[in-house]
Image (tube, rainbow, N blue to C red; front, side, top):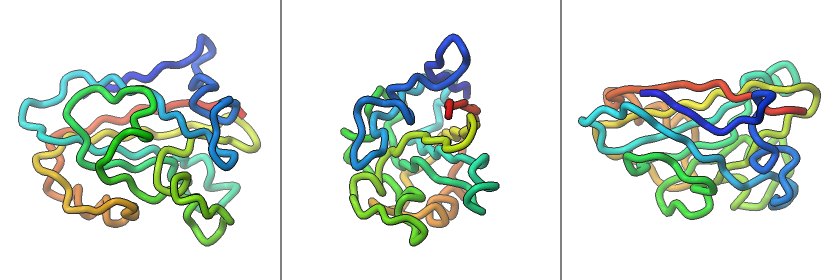
Length: 164
């Protein structure tokens, strides 16, 4: 599989999907970016995705999860998909005890990049799945990873930069 997302001429995620978005909920960018997915195997029946900021580790001590979604249709992901998808989406790091975020929408949908100190590189992973994940809305990353075992037909990663 191959992934493509829109980037600026400087190679960054456009502002509308990140820190400088004009559309935010409780201070967080909530418009998810579109994802073009090429060469999806014919044996795939669902997709799943994760968006994780490993560059956050020096500041937070752990990777920052921005988006988890499971049981997606086998097709390109449209802009703002997170707000309209009625399938399971997982808890992001804003749900952690280390943050005071209590807006359930923000903690269980796309919460865009907000690099505090310098540009960060975000890892978008998309998985082609044999069958639906046995997972409920507001799941956690460990459950997501467990459900990937023996279920992945193909996977692709894309590194996306967001400006500070």
